[in-house]
Image 1: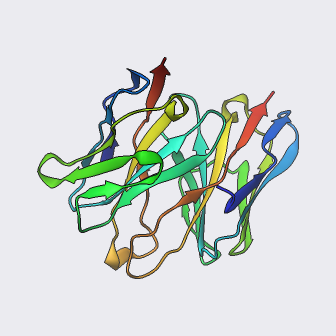
Image 2: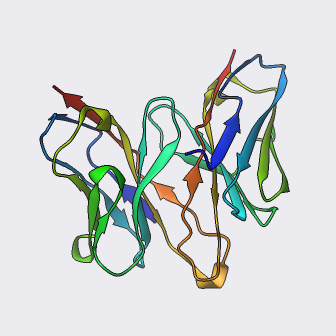
Image 3: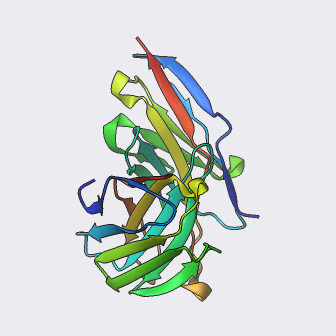
Length: 115
Length: 118
């Protein structure tokens, strides 16, 4: 799905590092999402941005900090992570409307390993 | 509580055989329903979705799904699987809330891993 791109695809970082994940959507959507996918766990919704405003923060630790400068770009800033934060981080986007029925399209994910 | 259940963690089928992956939902209202597929190390690709209307939905790659309100189910089917269908499959549901627009959440099942044997 080339409509949503994520960089980098793989990231290895130490617990004291600061890094950022980037997501870009080319679909003209107005909502963007960050999910965490850990082994043997359901996808966990982390953050939701509607029209660039954050509307959801699913009790995510403050070491994860999202940023949505415009409706096409979404970042996830990482600092002082823990090994249990190692996971696949997926970005998605959708076109929200009052009539409902929005469909989320996903990027390829960033595989994060925290040492 | 709202939930999506995929009872089968792992299914193995022979190439060319038919496939059915089960999905059940528990919601107060009929949700929008989706099936996604994820190949190893990749993101989720949308296979098909059901919003309303015809309860048999056609998707990409030869997949179809049938919505059965009486059974709260949305099972995914394919008449003849190919080796390239080996992947993890996720069912998901979303309830649209007109009074709380913008706060709908897509809820995923835990996934079913499909293995294809020659």
